[in-house]
Image 1 (cartoon, rainbow, N blue to C red):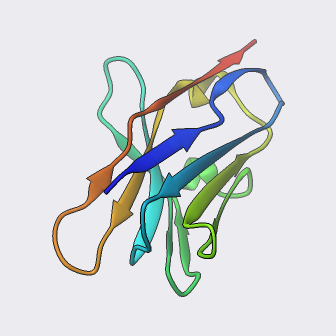
Image 2 (image 1 turned 90 degrees about the horizontal axis):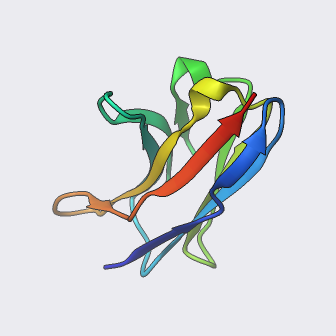
Image 3 (image 1 turned 135 degrees about the vertical axis):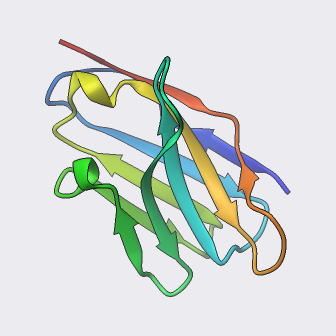
Amino acid sequence: VQLQASGGGLVQVGGSLRLSCVASGLFLRMGWYRQSPGKQRELVATITSDGRSNYADYAKGRFTISRDDAQNTAYLQMNSMKPEDTAVYYCNAKPIYGTDYWGKGTQVTVSS
């Protein structure tokens, strides 16, 4: 199983980025987590195979998660970005059976 995340980078406050995560198959649920220096990894958003999404409070209204099962890809559109969004973002995939898979992180930096 492989999860390939991309789309991170440097953006100014108020700007936007879109992260992509390409999976090597279909998963029950896909999502994004993030980790800032000195902090624990935290949920950003998840989306199930039937399209149900879940967001952390700080992401509601600014971030949108979506998935394209034909491409085995999940996306995270991030708008109105803030300095506190700076973190390494990790793609996560939950199979029907077994433990979750994690991709390598992609760095997102929001400059003020």
